Image (tube, rainbow, N blue to C red; front, side, top):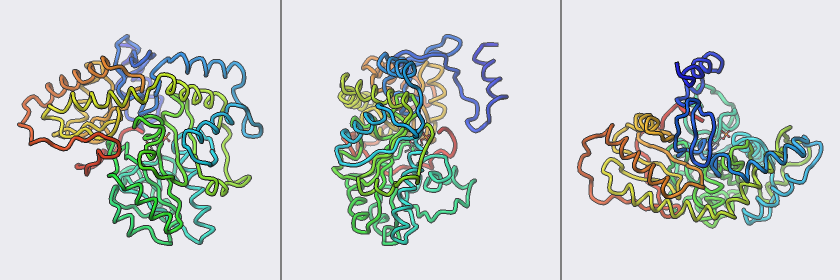
Length: 426
Ligand SMILES: *Cc1c(COP(=O)(O)O)cnc(C)c1O
């Protein structure tokens, strides 16, 4: 029996079944390639779900983590350290607005903190309602889950005891109807990641900003997946020219080291007075050093320009394939929509061809590779994807006339069709 199979058997006995049985047992990674415990290599096109921004084993990240671990691994929040101050200052500089930062350890924790800000804001005004979006994803802890629109993952835990209204995503009129003076906050993703990389239509975030300003509700943008380079920018909302009250970050922020962050305007941040929130590990020196290394490397290696240029190349490569109906998203954060609901089979077949990707819903293959990916690697992915489609959808039907395939920032939105996949990570 292969070592992969042995590990899978042990995994199945020792770990809980909430992820099912993962298909690949990874031993190590280098650049955009990971190697499993039997020595098979794979091109990593999913980057640990939009996390491994610098790829694997990047010297800058290794040096930052090892060096920081050797100096100071932990302080708790009883004491401060240099790296958390540097990182908070840097995040505000990248955001481009005066404000404050709260550091935590994951996406769901960032949203919990944002939800607490929203509740404090609402309590001061006598409001309890939160508006969030259908099919949205904000995390698995109970607060973040209560505003998560994906019913299949939320409903088993109901009642969650919160006054939440879900509106159809991307529909400014529905938002307008929902946002009145009973609303404490609106939570939105600039692009819905877990639903298959579904961007909001142009003007949607701007409308959300106008509506929340008019009703004195907080606008909270969940940029946990969309932020930190996925769209070829630090923040997806920068393209819309708006300033939300609160932004949450995680995933790519640490390049693989767990870290989350909440950025808030001075006014919203003032709600967090002494004692209202905290985290033992939040702002951990190793995580902060990792994040500073990610930021520095993105800047030094011009990685946004890299993924923006390669995003155009991807569009060109897939444009002629009749089995691909749409390529949503920006840069190299993409939902590749298939004419048939065979995304899971395609992703399974790709593993056999040495490529890791993900199927967030039956008709969508999602990619979110390291920002360091090269053009030959992207070409190899396109070749393998086409090979997988050849194996699974061998007789392409004639392509309908020139579908809209606009991948420029914030304009790739098209109505999702098909139900989102209920299970799967995260
Ligand atoms: C992944 C994700 C989360 C949850 O982050 P975790 O680190 O898994 O808790 C929240 N919101 C969005 C948009 C995400 O993509």
